[in-house]
Length: 141
Image (cartoon, rainbow, N blue to C red):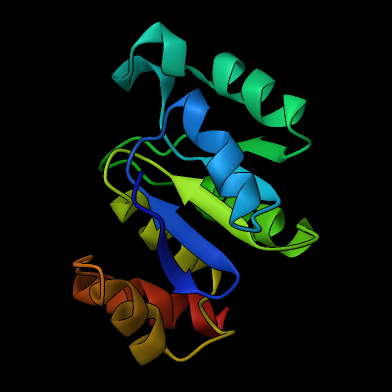
């Protein structure tokens, strides 16, 4: 597992296993967001299995599957809501962490400068420069 803290309150990671959840909780995260559609992964990593394991540890689990190349405004709104309602730090995962970074950046459009929304994920190799027009459009409302 590779926790990549975009901010002190939001981290992303490539795909995790149920056995990673105790370490995620121990690291202080209280909400786990699954940005991976079940169709991409083996059954033991499906949403229902991950939810069961997370909730058994007292973690809040949110399923917000983002299909590669088909991100929707509903995905952005769901990520924003999960972050806003979390009582503490949020941990999001997908295949590489990229989609979880993208929905975070779009969900925070208008709340943080576009340079920060692109620059913070870039520290971990997530290149979001191509999203600047969408970030700026969402910031304008």
